[in-house]
Length: 338
Image 1 (cartoon, rainbow, N blue to C red):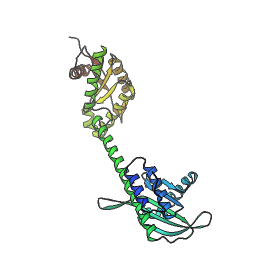
Image 2: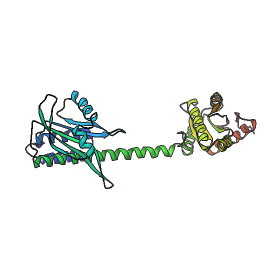
Image 3: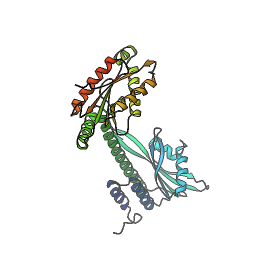
């Protein structure tokens, strides 16, 4: 199919650009095409599109026409590094500057047109960036050219805004997924995730006729520490313990926080006691957190000897934890036979 000539048919610019941007795909490539066709239709020699990026909102070049690749980075640095640059000014003030005359590095004159990329957000105009076009020498920008430039700026602004909205929606979904599976204080798996993992490990152990160990850990004297030193001190202890747990377990193990000061490790195989001892030694080496002495007690249960379901194993490990508490701070106990 023959592509329309935007120089001969100015209407081809909005039509072709709108189709490319509406169909999604590679936004950068679509914006490059928009700049190219608009420059061709208006006789512009140069075109550049810059958007606000980063925490400081600095302008970043994302599409250009007429700039050789080696010239793009210096151009971006020139605009971003000079708040009085005409392009930066148009983005900051949100007002177009069409028909300005400037001087090129070689001393020749050029005519420029800088149009902010503006979208409405809750009734408030937001400037996403700026699109700029340049012509050699002095030039009067007629109404037709102005209309094409404004249309190109509006199309680019809509496409960029849609892309950002899509990205934010995706980030929101990812965040909700993390929240639904992780403990917000420690970043470990939460009770819901633990239940799913433990059920899967039990089913696998049944098929392979292997063991699964469940270790429940409790911070000794945590309630008193929380009452005496405050919630902030308690949270610091919990995060410190969580870090040790994550460091000491194997890649195949799962660590979760299931209560105020209770943590659970699901360890495929029969090495629950070994894992628990390693964790307790690491906590002993830590000694204290914020001048608060910290020790853990642990209870161990094994599938299938101590239970054949997730509920039975957790209950058995909690029962063993009670025995560990009776033995004193920093103790580990297994389910008692009989």
